[in-house]
Length: 115
Image: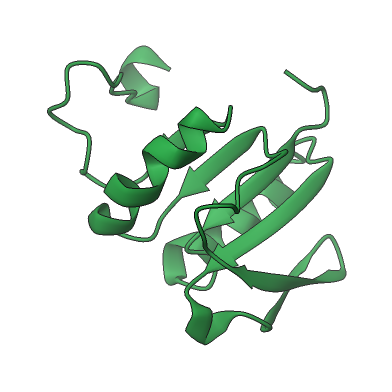
């Protein structure tokens, strides 16, 4: 994987998405580029990351080209629809919902246990 990965936050304008963005910054995660994705209603809104305004883009099936890591926090139905699309595009997908919890083909990671 790229040492400074292109990271996407899906559900960037929600409470958890905003916390994900803050945590990437606070923990000095080596983000090469950050793409913020949300529903069409929030497209065009800007959020701050490392002092820069980043424009939120509409989440579409084509949103994951060139992205290395996709952090999902937009609810189970969005994760079910777009998670496999992101994975097929080559992203490492980290989903914060319970959408794949019982799927034996998807690893469940609990940082305190199997980080």
